[in-house]
Length: 237
Image (tube, rainbow, N blue to C red; front, side, top):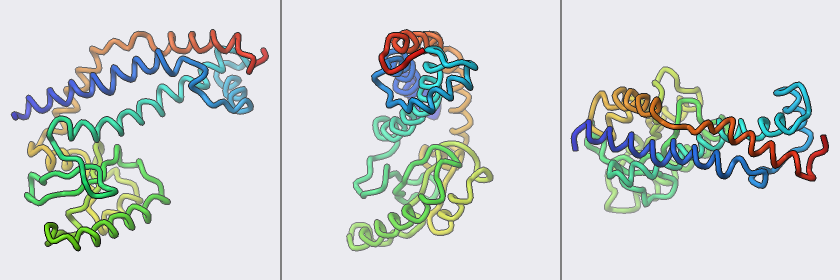
């Protein structure tokens, strides 16, 4: 498969399973009051922050904005990307617990077991020791398998999908001392074999995004949610 063909397949996957799915979920799921667990004190305060008033519109925005602009798209991105690598034949799903994918590193030609992360600041300090411990126990178990003889710490990696090594948080840098944290352009080079694949993919995704019909989801979704809130016994205005 050529670099252009692979890039096109990934862009199509993003459009179908991440962007368009997000639009539809925003309009059909997140615009429904029943999809939320509501903290009545916090949501009233946030309504005041957003609208300077306790109103159905303020409540709707306080619920809808964080879900649609944060939780929903980030969750979809993380889940779908792992599936994408496998479904498009870029990598294999890993049979080793704690690893997301397996692939042949196109630079050093060694097999890599990889845990995927979205960006250079997507783990917290409390995640570091458990992750290293998981890697260590996984490697120890793998070394008992004669078929995996010769594996090393550097064969078990964290793959960060976007960003640059200079942007990696201190938490990632701690992990990198024992297990490579491969980020952005370098990661995509290793998994696809194309040195400039990452930059080209970002450019093509930007073009795709410019042509997506978001169906005025922010206004439509908020309005539908506000209409439900107006008649809900949970709120008194």
